[in-house]
Image 1 (tube, rainbow, N blue to C red):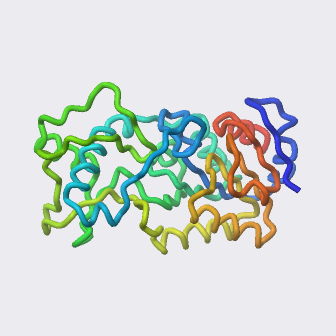
Image 2: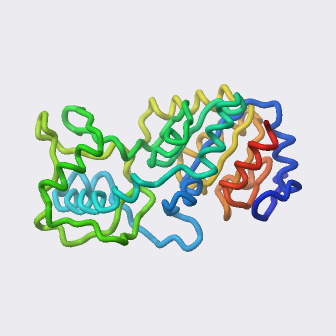
Length: 280
């Protein structure tokens, strides 16, 4: 039976069962958008999140107008997205790894904040917004260099002081007729941020890395993910088949709650900091 706790910050009783299950075990952690909300990056499905219809991979491929909309909106959001700083949750995860308690991080986020916080073994299931690749020849680019090209080719596109940022660093924009799309400087092909769009599959090699990390671990922590995305559920399936302890930390329900050993209904930053203190 799942044990559930509700609350905020460090009243230790709500963590007792989780700590008992996790202490002395090597952990893997799966993180979702809820881990980055304290860094100013919104959640797709958290309380108060607006309903969004993200662009699909097929739309991006099929239509130059869709690519204009995507790149213009993504460029407007990039500066704010890139300036986000790791929060207490990211820092606690990195410290758990440094202390040998955590074997590695699997993240559904594309913000790169785990690496910036000091985590070493990070599997970015859905890619990272700081990389761009050509869909034709495979050439990779730093996102900053593409941002410089967009700014030079589209001087009229000025980032407003306040934009409605999405979890993937995009903003809504509609007037894109004059926008110049960046293309591959090697072959002229279509460029795309190195992230998994809706309608795309997680690359097999990435998912194999994630599965290997869970296989090496003795317990799984899931933090800030509603587990709506199939890749997360498949990793939960792997853990439960092995009868590993599973601790879920999330505000609001998740698709994995019924299978969790412990569900903690609380913010990820303070709870991960509590776990760091209690498990060290």
